[in-house]
Image 1 (cartoon, one colour):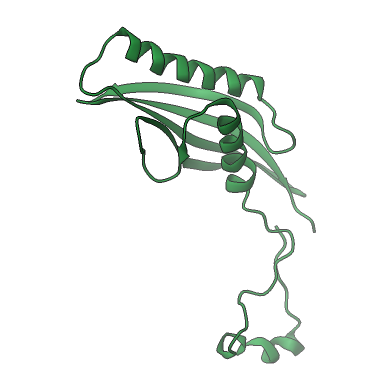
Image 2: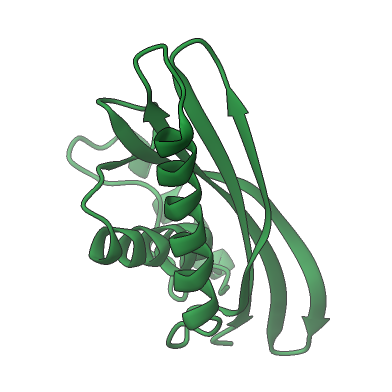
Length: 164
């Protein structure tokens, strides 16, 4: 990530830009990338959308069945002179409404969905230049009065190279 540097002689010229109407702050940053969103969450959304005919949300579940994607962790794995390697964890929740009764078909459908997610991730261990070492770390399924909720933890690694 590049830092925006201002020459000292120009510092007085820009300190009051936020007072000017129509000026958009902050100053332009070269090399900034929202990695967890653009390389991980957005690409994971694309994979799921291409595989399933199930709506995907980022806030809460809607309808009879849906996915919700939530970022969990962003951890530094290794630091280089030219960048860094980071491990990302994202929760993929799948909710299936059962209408208050549970039978073998509901369990089969929920299990089939998360097994397909596991296979989809396995087939995309490396996804273009966005991530590598992509994997389903864990799956936990819980049940309440009317639904089955499968929480699928996806982890991957991404290497970020600075443009300096």
